Length: 266
Ligand code: ADP
Ligand code: MG
Image 1 (tube, rainbow, N blue to C red):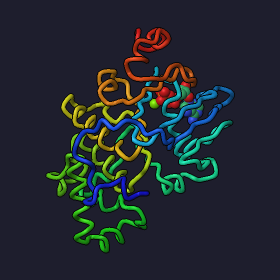
Image 2 (cartoon, helix red, strand yellow; image 1 turned 135 degrees about the horizontal axis):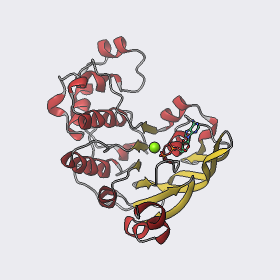
Image 3 (tube, rainbow, N blue to C red; image 1 turned 120 degrees about the vertical axis):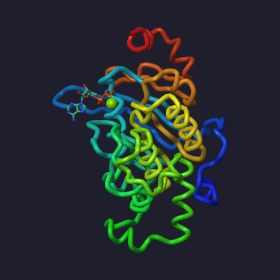
Image 4 (tube, rainbow, N blue to C red; image 1 turned 135 degrees about the vertical axis):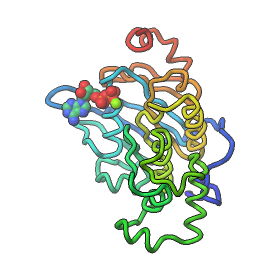
């Protein structure tokens, strides 16, 4: 089943794809709720994401977007409801097991090893790596290097492999972290505002990248920039006060009076 998800060289498909969602639900969020001292940050939320789908989540600050991702990846435990990934209840798994099951999560700020080179960051991102030294000493094989080169090319960093990650631009660090997540071949990638702070050109490249990533996988992206959302999203989910306000294509949610009222109107 995994064989179709990656190209033989470990790289992503080349073309920015218009592959439609597949009707195969990879993620189901059912009646999910979490309370922090009685305040419901997410409140009875249900949604489903299909394989090959790029879903964008939008909504005002404090709508519960990040908290939703926190619950999917096991960082925050729901008070009620559940998250099913390929039919498996993630509530039974810890964060590490959820990663192993195929869910990759990128937080808002880039977290890369600034003192290591880009190449070294890719090397230690591989699964089954236990400890920095072991991975650097034992994993530098030709096949591995080929895979890293393919991934570095996918995330626009092929000519940056020998640079220290700390010297990269903010956008390049975001790409590096996305590439490091992809090395683990997740089936579902969760990204929290990945293009915040990027230049227009970097945003465009990232949009193409996310579209390519969604082929054979699923991507859930939190984003605010509606022009960007319109370009990349198959579907958009709008959250407001922890609840689902609207869902549909970017054009559909943009013309939904409820969305205009609480979010886009401002
Ligand atoms: P968004 O990402 O949509 O801006 P968040 O999911 O970060 O919103 O937050 C939703 C609401 O939940 C906010 O009011 C926030 O203050 C609150 N919240 C999030 N995490 C916690 C927490 N660990 N403890 C208490 N309140 C929290
Ligand atoms: Mg947030």
